[in-house]
Length: 502
View 1: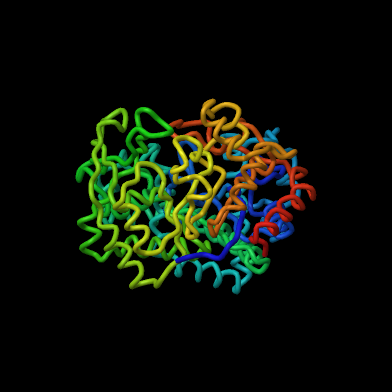
View 2 (view 1 turned 135 degrees about the horizontal axis):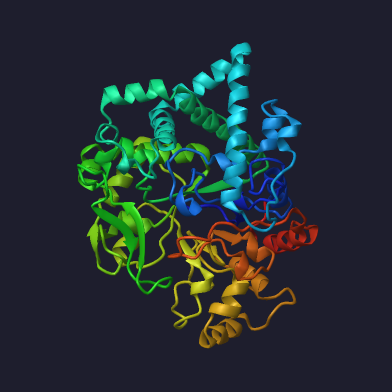
């Protein structure tokens, strides 16, 4: 599905500024949307919105559908009367330029529990609010019931993973689950409330963005976390040990640009034979749920839907894996027959062969072009701007790349730097980040997306993620004063010059 000529900014909500230690869906989020509008942008790309576990990666979530409670705005809870002013006083000494996740979790989760208790009291006196909450729970029961129970059990079982629970809980014995639901009513209510509040706040923000002419581009990770409600409640969808529930095969990628030993992600591989026998019902419902909360879907690691890299459980690196064919065409036929033609972007990076490109092109999905990859090799390099196709999305870099300043000063080889400077012809007074921003905006690609760090010309300390590094990622934040009129005017002028303005 081709897209109109537009541009936008890549920024995850955790990176918003604010006094509560992590970006949230409150005032600063709306100010960022206003910045997009003033800068003549039409796209806002985010990372997955799910609740994160170890390592705080949005690609390792406890649920493929649930929202991250850490993104709930305390100020909005205050406006609703679910918190009091004194609840938001005496804040911890949160850092301004990064998220200290441990400190945020320790402060915010008890705050959300207090808001849940107040909400439970309020709905006893407010029938309309009670009906709205009950309607949300009924309308989302297919995933919310499993998720709320799963999280309640994680909190109370004293183990880090569901695979360490009793056999009766691991295998979901109905009478044991019913007893757990009875015993854990308050915990389950808390997780239902958190999702209700998250989606209330998210949809209000999304409506504001859409009314302002901004579309939200959201990720759908190809895999889900082993320690998730999805794997626990639908073990048949994955290749698991039938006794322990542990993954028999693990997802990853072979050695590549980012790692000499490949990347071993730890996610369980899908049981594609089972999925095919159900006409991919689990995947269809997942895509439908994600499309409900964003306007455009970016399928992360798209190549894994043509062939996936499978590594036996127990391997320490991803080197000893193998490519296994996947029924990707049949999957997309099922999605199209159930949901119609969808606005999908294919993240077609990494070890790509012609079969992956054929699958992408068969359904008209735009692929991705990363400018940081463009200056090795010769003029045939597919990531050079003039080699991009109309039906593609071009980036300076993504959340997995260094910032452009960090890339230029730390990662770029002399040969590549020489080719870049030769390609540019001359440098602008704004610096190398804005030279590359100019290149992506001027390219023929229908869509151009720029990480906010490059708008600010920040170095590698503002990098969002280093693939293969388990900890220390996802924490970058900007300060509210950084969204200046000068940046807005400069980006808006360049966007208009190259025919991408709103």
